[in-house]
Image 1 (cartoon, rainbow over the protein chains, first blue to last red):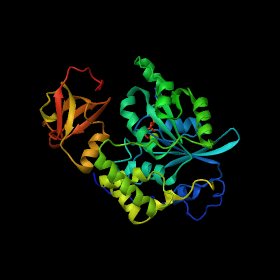
Image 2: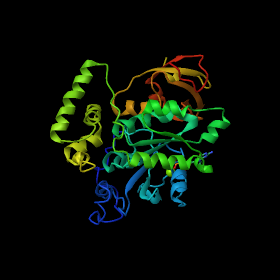
Image 3: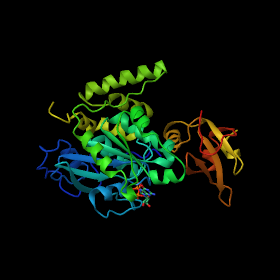
Image 4: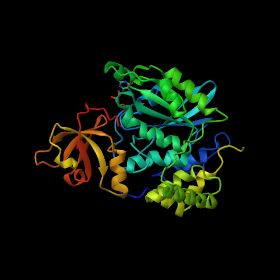
Length: 276
Length: 83
Ligand SMILES: Nc1nc2c(ncn2[C@@H]2O[C@H](COP(=O)(O)OP(=O)(O)OP(=O)(O)O)[C@@H](O)[C@H]2O)c(=O)[nH]1
Ligand SMILES: [Mg+2]
C-alpha cells in the first residue's frame, strides 16, 4: 500500500486552465484549489465535504446545492470531484464533494484526492460527514482532520438510522470533546440541514477558529524526533501550519508528504490564508 | 493466538500487530487497533481470505495478513471495544 501520492498540486486533468483565476481576491484558497483542478468561481467561501465511505456526503451535497449529483461510489480511475454552489446569509459558497476515506495517512487513489484537497486546497470549512451508527469507526478521520485544521463542522449523519437502532449520541458532549460544532442530520430526509448551514457559516466567518489539535507523545524519544524534524520543516517552509503533523508523516515514511517536501509543494501550505 | 486461528463466528480483542510501515498503518486505519473487538465472519470457500467484522464494518484479510494480528479471546459483545 505504499503507492506514492500523485504530486500534490498537480491533480488529475484539471478541468480548467489554472491561470484563469479572476476571483482570487475574493477567496485566497481559490488559486490553490485551481491548481488541484477545481474550477474557481465567484464565491466567498470554499467548503469541502469529507468522511468515511458511504456516510451520506453526496446526499448532503445534493441537499445543500439542490443538484442531482450521482449518489454512490466514485467509479473509475480518473477521479472527478463534484462541485456545486449555494448561497446562505448573503454569502456565496463553493462546495466540493470528496470521495470517502478512512484515513489521511495510508492512502488509495480515491483517498489521495480527499487528502490533496484537505491538505493543499485549504478549504475555508471542512464538513466531516460521519455515520452516527458507526461513530467509533468514523472518529479517527475526524481527529486526523482536526489535526490539520480547526475550521471543521461535524455532520452527525444517519441519525434516523441511529434512532432505529436505539442509539442516541450526545452531540453537546461531542462538540465539547472535539472543539468544533457537531450537528445531527438525516440528510436523506432534509433533517438538520438548516442547523448545518448555520454552523458552516459560523465557522467560515470565524475570526478566531479553534486551533488544530496537537497530539503529544508520551515517548520522549519520539517527542524529540518530532520536535527536531518539525523545526527543520518550519525552517525550510516558514509559516507552514502543522509542522508537527508533517514531521510525524515523514517519520512514518509517508511517500506523498516526502514528495511534497522534496518538490516544494509543501510551501503552498505556508501561504497565509488571510492577509493578517 | 493470531487472528487466522480465530474460528468462524468467534469474537476476540486485538492485542498487537506484527507489522511495520504502510501495512501496519493500513490495518490500523481499517480499525484494527489494540483493544478493538473483532469477529471472524465469513471464510471464502477455499478458506482464504476471511472477512472480519470490526467496528461495524467488514474487513477482508488474507491468511498472511491475519497471521500478523495478535488477538485474545473475549466475552465482549459484538461492536463493543471498551478497553
Ligand atoms: N437513512 C438514511 N440514509 C441516508 C442518509 N444520508 C444518506 N443516506 C443513504 O446512504 C447511502 C449513501 O449515501 P451517499 O450520499 O452516496 O454517501 P457518500 O458518503 O457520498 O458515499 P461515498 O461517496 O461512496 O463515500 C445512500 O443510499 C443514501 O440515500 C440519512 O441521513 N439517513
Ligand atoms: Mg459520494
